[in-house]
Length: 565
Image (cartoon, rainbow, N blue to C red; front, top):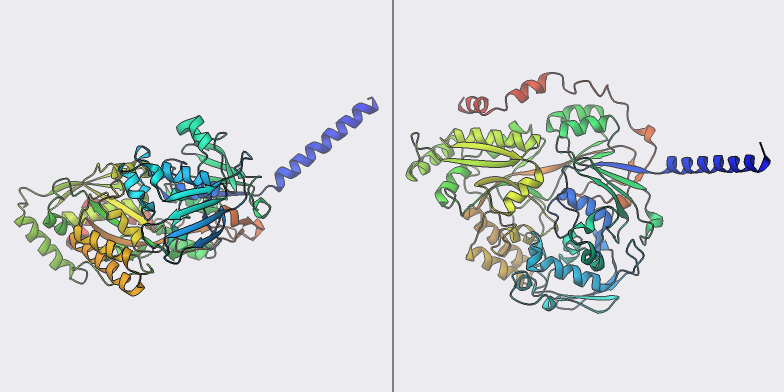
């Protein structure tokens, strides 16, 4: 063999070894993500599963630190006027992933696009604290009058309708992320496809295979790329918690959004350091469509609501590991509000509540020969399904006939957005720790989020007074009054305050459980995988046959028999 060929082959061999070594050295994080995203456009997104992915790619004026707390992100500094109404941001010198600089105009364009009526963004109302945001969103004034201005490329000024000390947390939400105008104008709705989506955050979209996975790769142009340790992030949709647990046990997932409540004993026995359960700022509830019969009738809503045994749902159906029974809409730990209001029947014995519910229904014209009937919609995941079947039995116990219908998450949320339901499972995770973040979803102006079509002048007036109130204690009382009014009107009924239920491998570094349930991949790292405990055969039954027997109980007939005994 000629020497020159030998040298070429040797060089190629070394190159292949170097490439293989680099590939082996890559750090890859595999995250189970709860649901298939509806969209990766921050102005179209509607779910936590989307927030997880989008927040790894795009970054607002504020972002979250490793503890889930707001820190400056795309902005490097901020000044606030003495009255709290004007916030002036200095944009951090950084680039989009195509190399073009991020400017204040990108934020102006994004805020105007989000609030433009033609965008029809479901979450537009979350930014109503901004001056003229609601008027712009309702098409009453031009978008140029929105209280967001860029006097120069490095300066952004946001003017508010009223003081909002929670603004830093609010601006970490994906509705406040910048979007690249030139790419939206060029690609339209396809701008979020792999190869077309440019971002200003730590990761770039490499691949999206619907119902299979989303692959992100490290953004070399991210301003803090040197401190990003994970090279690739895979997000796997995982509606089936039991299947996801098997994948986690098999090493196919490093983290998982939820674990099955039925497996808590097994998890605590075998991997106590990898199972997480803490309270979070979230409420699960039943929404009533007040523009559809029978839920246009207050008394019907009351009878249906008081027939629900919250304690049985939390402790018996979901084994006292899913969450706490809820008798109001504000989760424990919600800041800056009086949390005293509760549903008036919360301490009334269940048999008395059932008797009263039957009496109310009879007065409304419903009886055994002409029972109240409606359809209850829910998301097809195990715990929510169990709760739906139990609710069906609870309502049957007072003579109500309910059909339950399941949908995948993105279909379900779309049904609520367009108000195509009678009664439905609903949930809200607070985007920032203030009662207003929940209450705005019940305001008449928030049509797409206000699933119940709730409208109350008294409720609205309390919120307006709270917006004008500078005294924290007085504001807390006003928001507490708004909460009491919401409970009294029964546009919805609270069910549970769920826990966060994550699985996190012991070698995943810097994962911090926090009430806002945010862990950006930017802050995580992969350590020694040999530290992860060995597990029993992945094909073995976690709990033996016991929970198969329990699962067989979750039929309406079985629950009715149990309930009546």
